Structures are given as structure tokens and as C-alpha cells.
Length: 548
Image (cartoon, rainbow, N blue to C red; front, side, top):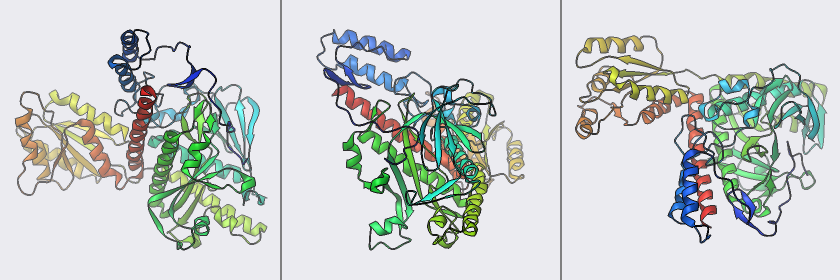
């Protein structure tokens, strides 16, 4: 079988005798299941057991109460549904895509998005010596070692070897290991900070990085925006340059002897791979497909400010042996994509420049190396926002501070700075306009959010006197909300302020404005869409397993 990254695929196995399908796979029918974690889930679990009376006649209202409590209690944090952990800035019940084990997070924790900010055990210092265990796997371009002093994690050591055609062509390119490691580390950091959970932990040295130990799913997922390369050979009649909307997803089974044959979704579902205790079924296949598309779109958006077109992308997923979750794994380096500066194939900077060589000479290999170095230098720029904007919240009174703090916290989840100011458009319109002018003068892209209860004067006054976006977010009361809302909705001609009721929604709307020109903010928004989709998919799977 082809190189499979950090672990080998297990063969599909039948259920053990006398077992039945449970919440976590096949379990012995007579075995007692421990109560779930989380206060609300445990209480509902006890109620459910009392409601069934031990007769095992199927689910009733009480048992369904346990399920829904577990779903809600487990929101956020990247764990299994019902693990009782709190999420970081996302809606309750959201289960994020993948997560390295808590023992496997280090200095990146302070920089990653709220989707991956759960507290973790301390790591060895960045430059400390790691105690290498056995070699877990070795492929054409890397070696994987377990870490004795860092349980649950492995070290991925890159090689200076470059290959093509399943190693039919291979050469030593001095310095490639460091170049590839830099590219991979930057790409995974960008994805992790965006909210995509990966197995990546941190860069260890110039040629190696630490990752969560995964059993790799032996499938290469390919996402294409532009038809080129092998796709044209497999699909005669399609012209090179044909664009896919949305990006096209393909999958290939990793088998060097068979030249990595293309697989269908049905083949992947039917083979029933079981890795680290997780059986790969329809839900898992759907999650990987959706994640592949989101990852491609995030990287595509990130390369656009560099005037580079991401043509296609190859990724792999694994099952984290500690959390039993599917995570983005392996590497994403210059071997993993096609990258065309200015959208021009003739300027390609990826490994295709090596594949296209008629003869590998020292001079040609130096040209390929320069291309790889060019990518490694620019990939670091992907971590920098293009032109960071800000949100300025105008509140009519400090009594609205709690409402405004929610807006500020939600802005932080998107990496958008937020400032709070107190001013009244009714009682001090001159001061309101002076504060507004202060922010207009420094040239930083700004969205104004007006928070005023009762009669909202802030939003209309700001909107009528600035060309910047204005969002009304009134803190409505139960008694007068139905009347007060009209001061934020009915505007005279010439005013274009919008109205969003929830603080989180106002922050999201502002982030969507900034995301038009800031790929870092856009990536967090795109990741949130993916994570919400995955949480619903996983909740539906839990529901089906519970009611069967």
C-alpha cells in the first residue's frame, strides 16, 4: 500500500459475537455503560434509566431527554457530543472538526482561534530534545516517529527527497526538507487559526514538526477549481482551464502498485475502514468531502492577495488515536497543490515544474528549488491580514455595557479589534459626531455599531453623517421592545444603516464586511460555516444511532 502518513488502515471487521451497535460503536449487550460527562447530561441519563424501568423496551420521552441534553451539553470545544466541555465563541451544540489531544497543544494555543483554545497540558520547550521512540511509518518524503516524552504525539521528519510518478522519478534536492517543513507549518497554522482543527501541534525545528498521533485514512482527497493535469486525461473532451463552481471533489485510494486508483464515494463507504476505533461510514465521508472543499476555499482566498491562483489541492485525513475524531493530517506543502502566479500556467511554482522536466539536470533541479523557496517565502505572508479593520461600538449609556461586551467578545472570535465608546446622539450630538470624526481620520476600515435602547438616535445620526457602514444593535426590553424597534427600522430617505438584534449577529455582520478584503477574517467565517455543518451532521448520526 502507498505511504499512509502516521498509521496504517485497519481492515474492516465484523462486529464481535453478542454485541450490538452502541453510541461508540460495537459494545457487548450485557455491559454496563458509564454515565455521560456533564451535569445536565448525567441528570437526564438518570431520568432516562428511571423512565425505562430497566425493561429495555426502547426509547421513551425520558431517554430522548438524555440525548438532547447530551447534544447541547457537548457544544463546542471539538470533543464528542455530550462531553460536557464548553465551546469558545460558537453556538451551543457545535462540535468542531477534529482536535489534537489536550496533551498535544503548545505555544500555538495562544494564537489559535476560539475554536481550538481549550486549555492543554504544558509542552516541552520549543528547542528541547525530544525522546524519539519507534518509527511509526516512513514514506517517500518523510519519516514519522512516536515521542516517548510526549504521549499521543509524533514527530514528522521531512526528507530532502523529491519524487514524481509514485517515485518512478526521485532526486535529492538539498534543503527541500526545511522548505517543505516551513510551508506545511505556515499552512497548518493558518488553517488552525481559522478554526479548522488539524493534527498539527507546532513546528519543532527547521525540518520537523510535532503532530497528534493519527491512524491515516488511505485516501487522497483532491479539490479542483481548474481542470488540468490528470483530470483531462480521465475526462476527454473537457478543455484545460474549465472552472468548477463549486470546486470539484475527487478521491483516490493510496496504492502505489495500482497507481492510486480513483474511488467513488460508494466504494469508500462500502469498504468500512475502521481506524482507531472509528468506522468510516457515510457521515465521515461527507465530513471529509465538505472539509476538503472548505480547506481549499480558505487557501484559495489566502493566495489571492499574492496574485496567485490555487488551481487544485490534495489533502489527507486521519483519525486521532486519542480523541477518535477525523482531523486534517499529513502535510500540505508544495507537493500538495498547483499554484499559478497571475493565473498563468507557464509561471507555475509547484512540483509540476519538476514533473514536467524532460531530463533532471543540476541546473533544472536548482530551478525547481527556487520555485519551492519562492512559495515558502510567500506562504508566511498568508498568516498576515491584508488590512485589518475594526469595530467601534457607540453605546448611549453604560447601562448597555453588558450588551456591548458581547459584541466585543464575538468580534474577538473573528480576530477583529473592537472599541467601546459612550455617547448620546440625543443629549450630545456634537460629541457623537466628534468621536465619529476621530475614527474617520486615521484611515482604518471601520464599522460603527450603534447600541441604544428606547429611542435609537445613535444609528440614524451616525448613518446620516458618515460614509462608513453603520449597524444598529438595540438592546430591546421585553416590555417596550415591540415599540422601540421601530426607531432602528424606519429610516428617512438617505440613511442606509442595517439592524441586527443579536450582539453575536452584529459582530458577524461586521466581520463579513471586513472579510471581503481580509482573507484571515474570511477564513474564520468559512470555518464557522463548516463547523456548524459538521455539528449538525454528527448530531444527526447520534440521533439515528440512538433511535435504531
